Length: 233
Image (cartoon, rainbow, N blue to C red; front, side, top):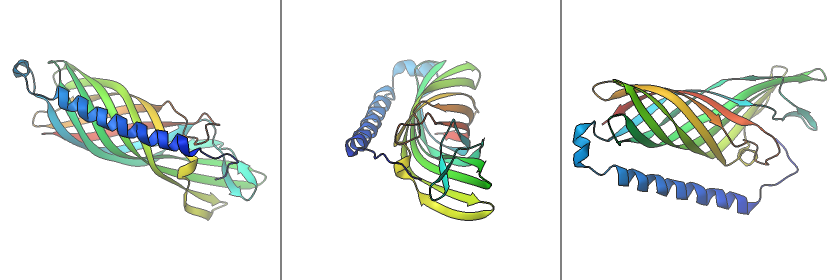
């Protein structure tokens, strides 16, 4: 993947500082709210948990890919790809009905796209690995059933892509980390159920609010549907 523009080193350094600061704030908030209190005897205790599952991932809008030297294609169609996620969370109960839930997840995202032009048919698949830091508000509306929403920041670790032209693989696993934005800001909305004994299940939709284009020229965003199984200790 090519571009005539370069990402400035100061921009990338600022992004790295941002992810460090947010991680520290998440830990501080979690520690502060997770302190035991007498009032908590009236509702479920705060808990630490692990979570993992599968994602359906795609992008929206335009994003070019190259099938031959000098030939640029824009997707005629987008296809969802399957990824996975795994990580930890802290469920901090503020009342019987309300909890905040910061977390830390390793997530595999991306997209698949296809195009045809000038008698050439091309398909590209992108895989991007992120560290996601959600900070959710969870509302327990009936028994174990709950609704949740909140912001999430994603830090891109690495990205690669494959290109197949007329059935022949031309590129496999090429690194395009510099072409993908280092930071993603995401809105999360979902629902879940907390079973007795610690297990829980969650289904959420995630809307990326920052373009994945590392050169800030295109309005292309991550879209993710996430199904998770978790366990609270």
